[in-house]
Image: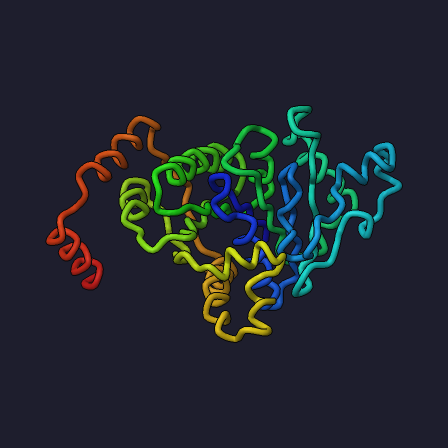
Length: 287
């Protein structure tokens, strides 16, 4: 199974991806996480350091693919999760998306794609140009990390459009949204009412998740010394269980940009009354 994780820049994709990878490993799966960002920090929470990148290794070997071995580019992370960082050109120079393609090419030549039960691509921000949309070509499912805010949902909608386009020629489905750092979900619910898709999980704003990123540890690793964090880890185990169950997923029908602006802006300007919210909650309880 191959998964791609997308979402607005800074929304918490890498921290979420690392914890999902460990959750999948806890379920007995052999997992490879591939960081697809020139910042090459996707797997930091799994390894505790910035591992050498694919592009670094290729440059050292003068782009002689035959001289590269799996141990040159694949590093062991927490929980047995293997880690790869694509890397990229210096800021402002070259195309990072091209490096993603080269990463996939090299890993295929190393037969790495055949060695794992799950491969998870953690992809740069909300960029869905050709290069950075490439992981969708290899994925069974896409997951979108968002919060309950306008900008993150607007980015999610653009990513949904990319999934729809890729699904025309690839067996790709959108597994659903992961709400991160959000205590409310009213805008998320408004969006999925308009653009139907599943919500895999809603994680509230949890300080320990932010701290885990700074420490370079997953929540699972931190829970070894703080058992209270097992409850937080359960969020990620729940996501892993849903993915491993093989959800049907959707080919999303994204909203037009102006339509989405109008939808969410109107919700901001004319929020539902307390009576309307109570009625909505009653409807949900009766479903």
